[in-house]
Image (tube, rainbow, N blue to C red; front, side, top):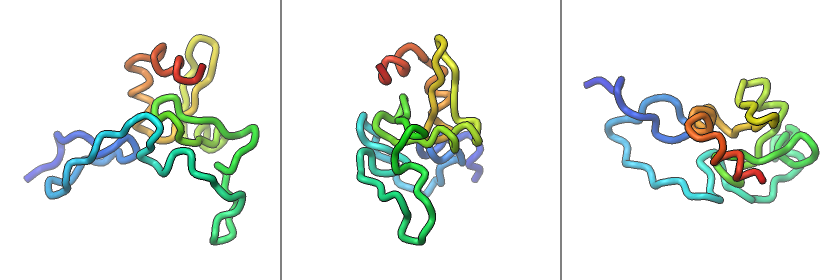
Length: 112
C-alpha cells in the first residue's frame, strides 16, 4: 500500500503518517507538538550544548502553536517565518507556516 495521499501526522512531522500508527490526539492551545509548552528550559542542555530556546531577545512564541518557544535566529535560518501587516512571525515547525497562511489575521491576533 502507498502512504502518498495521507496527511502529515502533526505540524512538526511533514512526512506522511504510517498506516499502522494510531491517530494523534488534537493539539490544543497551550500544548505543543514540538515539545512541552511553557516548560522551564535550562540555558545549557544536559549534553553541554547551548539551549537556543532558553530565553532572551532571540526567543518568541509560535503564533500557531501558542506557547511553543521559537528561536528567531533558528527559525529564520530554516525559513520558518512570515511577514504580515508590517510584522514578522516566527514558527516552531514547518507545518505552522501554511496554517498561518490560511488565516494570518487570526494567528497574528494570538501574538497581541
